[in-house]
Amino acid sequence: MKKSGFFSNIKSDAISGIIVFLIALPLCLGIAQASEAPLFSGLVAGIIGGIVIGAMSGSQLSVAGPAAGLVAIVISALTILSWEAFLCAVIVAGALQIVLGFLKAGSIANYFPNSVIEGMLAGIGLTIIIKQIPEALGYDGEGHERMASAEDGFTWDYVTSSFNHMETGAIIISVVGLALLMLWTLRPFKKLTLLPSGLVVVVVGVLVNELFKMQGSELYLGTIHLVNLPIAASFSEFFGQFTLPDFSGFGTKQVWITGATIAAVASIETLLCIEATDKLDPQKRYTPTNRELKAQGIGNMLSGLVGGLPITSVIVRSSANIHSGAKSKMATIIHGTLLLVCVGSIPVILNMIPKASLAAILIFVGYKLCNPKSFIHAYKEGGWTQFIPLVITTLAVVKFDLLTGVGIGLGISIIFLLIRNMRIPFFFRRTSYENEDIIEIKLAQEVSFLNKAGIKMALQRLPENSKIIIDANETEYIDFDVLDLIREFHNNQAKEKNIEMSLIGFKEIYKVPSAKSATEMLSKLNTNGGKHSETSSGNYKQLIQELDEEKDYKQLIQELDKEIDADKT
Image (tube, rainbow, N blue to C red; front, side, top):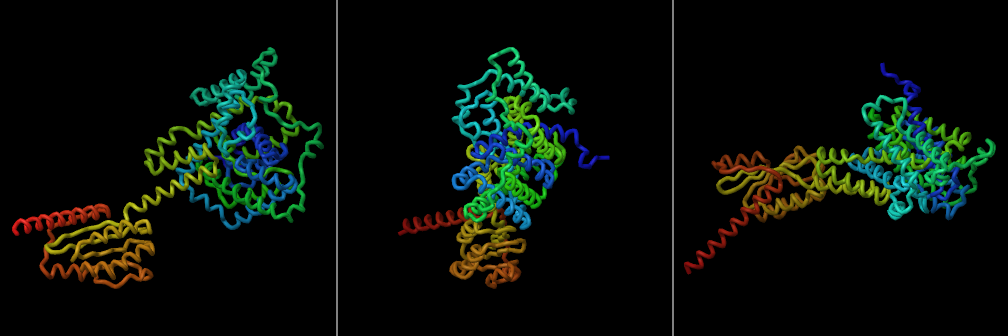
């Protein structure tokens, strides 16, 4: 019988929680520094994201914390507001997210195409790899804080310059780490489920660097290449780092504007990450998005109250959580608890971890996110309509940032949707009699304004003295522009060309003009003893091509007749 209790997967969740804690620790500090905020504020956001949001969220695998996607907003706000007043904006953002949750705004996540979500994951994976290359090489130059996460694009100059400032010790540690991670994917090592590869990489990295130190080797990595955690002299000093907001800030207009901006961006990022996390979940569980917005809102309100940065669901940590073997939200809670306990009790030990070891773990996670197999699968299963949005979303996320990349990918997907919608506005069946034609046009299920051009071209090419039946029995929706076109053709062009029309299956609300019934039109042909000589059918392009060819043929005959008449005279 399958276990389903809260602690039923405690072994795998504890191991994953430790790995995510080690990854989240430097990211929390890096994002705080990049935001020009107190370093401790990043840790506060990570603790609340792990424990509070982790417990309240409906997601089993998502990990929340400070996100790079909000860095620009924080920097901009802090040029106008004090840190204490900014915390009021974080509280406002949280309150608005709770309101959005009750308004069921979380349903917007259901409208992101799979190709865009997969492209976002691949883009973040590729960005992780690119951003972690400098850390793996041991470069720690100016600007590395802004390269801390994977949701805000990257600076190419920083990556290229890292090749000119390589540390051999860091390269050795990162290569050994990557080798261990790859070995753990082989069948013999898969049996070592209680010995997680990520934890092994961290421990081996610490031991190798300490060995360099003991030997007095130049390969030893100093403080700048290690995790850098603030060390408090006592517990009272540790808790003294928490900051209370200046509640008078609620009377400032800029606080409310900043709060609304944070709420909008954080909510969109969270919904995107939740959708992506559900897609990566091996058990394919679904997260209640409205509950997630409420949990994020409560977390942000609490973060603002105790001096933390704004929080979102973060795909880098969530994907690392999944690939480390997490089974439930207990892993997220453990990661948050470890942040709280270890930051206050054993910062000296944590500061021994080389950043190169963490870079190796993240590069491996990035590879799994942008695995070439996902691109091949998208092309084989969905063709160009899935492949192109996936590739463009991936490249846009790498070039710009998560939200911009997803927006571009969504735009490309909409374009493909519109193109598909334009393709087949109707099918036709044409029967040719001795002196006249009857053309039956069966409209598609959805006829939008994009189909107007195709229908208009077909109507304009109808030959004189023909009969046309437009059938809307299977059509659920017809755009006003198309209805207007049909009415205008019936009232004007059809009369000029002596074309009889029958409009059947149109809903009463469309108010199309009354016309001859199809039965009356067909019975008249049979009464006259007409026998059809030819029948054709197909889509609207085939009909247009057929009518154009006949028109060209008639014009050619007319020109030949004129030449013959001219020769006779």
